[in-house]
Length: 167
Image (cartoon, rainbow, N blue to C red; front, side, top):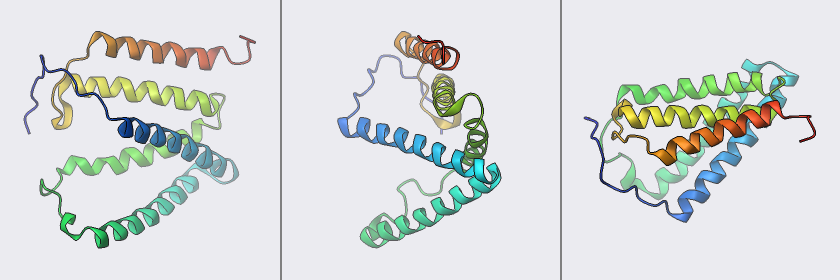
């Protein structure tokens, strides 16, 4: 797939349900990080990661079974096979769980870990959008995108370094 540069097209406004789904995903990510951190504090980060991925795999298989039965026409995606690099998501997911499980029990705590994670996600997403990495449509960051990243970084620094200062 060739990355295309989109210059004059205005981005589509997100649907309210898309915003709600993203907020729910962020909340679930926080809950996952908290529960994995508690598990790691009582066992090890690797055991916590294996437990999380084992339970996640069971839930995914159950959901796949439910959707497979309810919508047999959607058994095969419209684009055929996924590219090989698409399977790397499992590796990055596993590393995210292990690393964040260790870090959440550090002086960063849950809030600092989530804030730094958000800053990293936005920064890498802007890089991927700008370069058209992994087949994405190339979209150069706009001024508002960079201002949002700067605000996230400043907020992250406030969360981490202003803790306990009475501010």
